[in-house]
Length: 457
Image 1: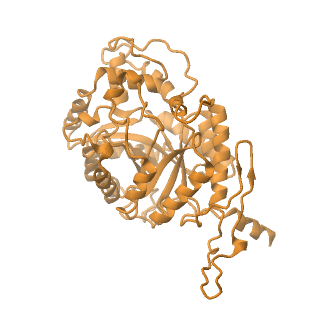
Image 2: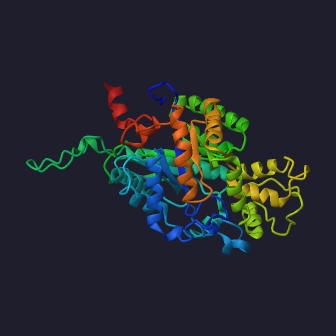
Image 3: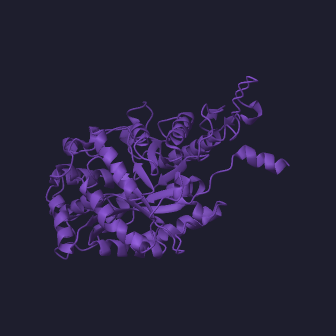
């Protein structure tokens, strides 16, 4: 368990990067860079600010489709086109020194060998700071860009993902640490006995190996996953080292945390082998009134049609024909994306401004502000108090920060909240080591072949 000199458990922090911000209307903010999706220098400054704030990692989500919202309002969405995250993080590795670099790659539309090679390479380029966010791709429109095959059912996608991750990890063990002797005198470049062919033959994949990338600084790049479903939880317990999730109440976060730690132990691992980091939306200012004013400024920029379209995409039902000032109608269960859908439906049971059921407009604004993550609007002390309450009460190991708007939201957090966390001795003042595993307090994996050799002795 990572702890400071005071003995306090240290909070983990990821920065969820998104071009203009996580509020749906962020690109319309007067201080936002509307061209952020094609502005590399904007991302460089974002990464440098996060590293100055001692964040554990940068995290970039991804989707293999421009249709991230309802097509009827697509022209209002600011993240229909953005830089491919693996390439982006590889470039950012040359502008940073300590911060981790995590991005998404899908098990539905790629091959294990490609993923193993790319992330091992990023780990080498960055000096051991790479992480792979494993997704099975819940948006059926992504499948339309790859083949005539319909989007696989969730259970099958996760069964495929489990084998996919196993193959990737096996390929990362292709070479022993000292395999490459590079002996110019003898002409021997590597020790053949220290190269290992995987020879995997499974339900979905046949992969010979070895990987044509040497063992990387971390042994294995860090495995990150997300999802609240039964399938997602079980895959994470078996394979993940960091879990990103969305909880809008302390109680649901505590229940998820306890469940994931118990599942991880049941899979033969230790509880601290997995870090739970729910998303956190923060709007901070010197006074609560100023913080609320910042939020209201963003809410007033929300286009009503866009709010409905994005809520439709997340809840899995087309709401575009419904009236904004009436409550959410009864909806059938969503079979494709259930966790956020269930969360939004639960909001409809919480009284709105009028004291009755919240209107669709209110639900749209709530989702626009936080995208389903826990939201804090207040002073630096307010934010630090609430973050510490979650951290100290068994709700999380840290947070994945989702700023409402860039650059202001990140700048304000680093300037006002980070010093408060450091003052309380629950967040680092210096990085613990050169690799992402050092920073997160995760063990370096031992190669399966080294384990077998030791067992045979």
